[in-house]
Amino acid sequence: MATNALINAPWLKYYDDVPHNLDYPNCSMVHMVLATAKKYPETAAYEFFGCKQTYKTFADEIYLCARGLLAINVKKSDKVTICMPNTPQAVIMFYALNLIGAVANMVHPLSAEEELVGFINDSDSKAVLTLDQFADKLDTILPRTKAQTLILAGADDGLRGITKSLYLMTKGRKIKRRKTKDNILRYSDLMKFGSLYTGIVTDEMRGDDVAAILYSGGTSGTSKGILLTNLNFNALAMQTVAAGDCVVPTNIMLAIMPVFHGFGLGVCLHTAFVAGGTALLIPQFSLKAYMKILKKKKPHYIAGVPTLFEAMLKQPDIRKIDMSQMAGIFCGGDSLSIELKRKVDELLKECGSTEQIREGYGLTECVTASCLTPRKFHREGSIGIPYPDMYYKIVRRETTETADYNEEGEIVISGPTVMKGYNNNEEETANTLKTHEDGRIWLHTGDLGVMDEDGFIYFRQRIKRMIVSSGYSIYPSQLENAIESHESVLISCVIGIPDEYKMQKIKAFIILRNEQEATDEIKSSIFEHCRKNIAKYAMPSEFEYRNELPRTIIGKVAYLELEKEEEQCRKKNN
Image (tube, rainbow, N blue to C red; front, side, top):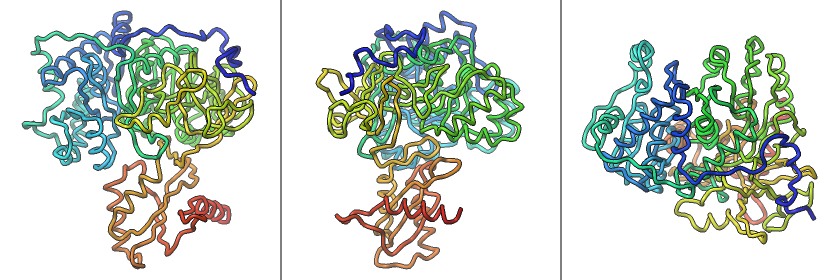
């Protein structure tokens, strides 16, 4: 039987000079960021389309926004939904909420209307922050939510000088700027309210207080709000700095992973701010723009999903870019294949970097990565070794029994980044967070893996039926529910099929009611229905209409059979 993984953890020898245990302060997230601002006041905290903001000014913006929130009666323990891409307003609001003891509810701005209604109501959000681009959608659904205020920001709010003028003359001309009314105000007005507010702003949050709600699928495949604390984020930042063994002040982090994602929020932003680095905010991914940034800005750290690195390899001029300054290249969100790692490592070497791409593993229930490939060493096929103070075990499925080394079982995790629980869902929390015989609380990931004798972890597959497309976790049951809510659909089945760019793309199989013929009119109606009720990133790329679907022995749709059919068809076509 394998050792408990807490006693003489075998992976410790691979950390070299990295501390195995850290001392975590009992404070808020913003407390750590403001401490950085005092230490490095003139260092650039973030950059947005060439406009840099120092830590001193960043701290001033956080305080101003916090006072503005208090002025509109957002107070301690209230929730505010941030429905934004990576912009200064999103980041400032995130920490301003933390400063007054409120909770940030982070959601994808491309979420479908029904999803947004659910996210806002489930969190009991008092207000919503979004960009003008998404104003119509939010304004339409606001009456169906508990939110009282819609705060609108323009992308140009984070710009200055000639950059602002150019934006307003080009992209900005196409975006309708909403006027304020009773329940709608502009972000700039919120900041003005802050300048007039005379009350006291105090930071009273502690480590165990809930700071943010992020969304993931949980173990049952339905979207759930994940309650993450100040300690969760602060521990992650300190662990990433330690385990990363490369994160230093003034270095540039390319923050392209989204602010509503644990990877983007926890690593690309909070870790950078805790370390005194500069976060290069990128609100929308464009491969062409990404290549220009790599060449011009020369970031020291890049983080992305396998899709990003695959796309980079296909660029004809990528090998002309000098990457000798690179100190950390991190991959997460999906498994990094052995072949892709080899190719990226070769690319980095050709571009002058002495670093390797480092795979991380984690899930939103522990913010993001809690396991990482060591800086100067890797074991082929492994997702790395645990962060300081994070412990991994492999347990036999549906038990708490520790598996032997190299025996496949469920990956379970314990440590200071593990979530507080699911919002308004005690049953699912109990199914996911379990106290084992050792007295520790372990997060059951729903993922299969093995641990070797040296403590390296190997991911095998997801126990949950889940599709990963471009780094997003997509749950077929949710999509099937949306499709089947159309009046013409009897039943549907959604599967993921291999895709060279997205890793997996989504295909929906549909049986119509009353043996209807799949006319162009019906197909169009179902497509429009899906587009309204399914997030853009989860939208099926293929629809196939059938008279029947394969079934299991107990009558369920045999999605594995459909996956096999697609695989055989793909092999035949190749």
